[in-house]
Image (cartoon, rainbow, N blue to C red; front, top):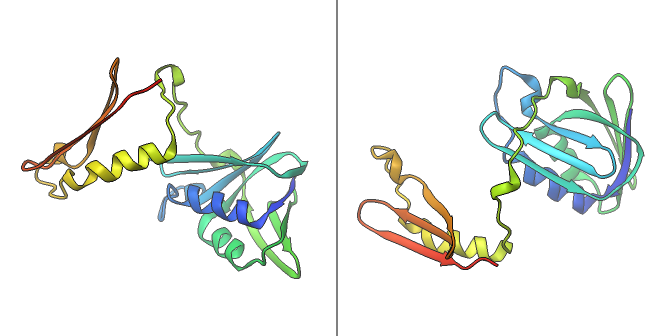
Length: 184
């Protein structure tokens, strides 16, 4: 059903990233898991019906397919594996066998058919900028984001794109932070 191998460090980083968007408690068991899709690349997704994160990584894919694994269990298993190549093998009954060096784990999976589709993002209005630039913009404005829920409009930051570039603004009622970055 699904079979691939990849480096443990790459898989661990991807699992850690998408786990941030996985629901901790849900009436839909698949939302407490990570969707693994093996096609041309290995794609992992986490989604809690409000926030979704999707990432890809390279691996040697032997059998294409899709499966959902409990994010907490899968993350724990990946962390405990030695630094080596991870071999992932899932059968038609969604039983997963993980091997890495001398370590071997078994865990149950779920059908990917129960996993809701992440909304597609219209990239017609997208921008591309370096990660360090975005991080710097967030660090330089986040101090002015309010933590007081009485004025919800102040609990976030505004991202605005115009002909001058990307502007990020945060305000908490007392302080205002603005950072503008030209776009190419």
